[in-house]
Length: 102
Image (tube, rainbow, N blue to C red; front, side, top):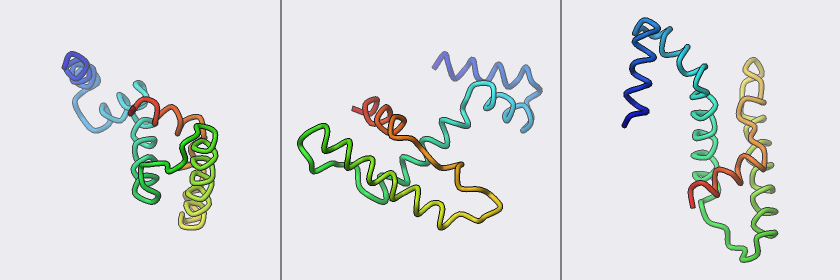
C-alpha cells in the first residue's frame, strides 16, 4: 500500500494530468511491465498455463517453441506500421515471469 501511495504522490508532483501519469510510467518502468503482463496473458490464453512435460529441460524447450510460435503469429497479425518487435519476449523473460508466479 505504501508503494501505491508513493506513486500517487509522484504523479501529483508532476501535475496530476495524463502527461504526468505517462511520465511516471516511463520513469518507473511501468510500461514494460504492462507489455510483459499483456504478453503473458496472450501466451497463457493461447497455449494454456501448464506444461505436460515432467523434466525441466523439456519444459524449457516446450516454452521456447510456444514463444516462437506466438512471436511468429504476432508478426503476421500486427500491422506493418507498428512493427512486430513490440510484443517479442525472450525465453529468459518468460522463464523469470513463470518462476515469480510459482
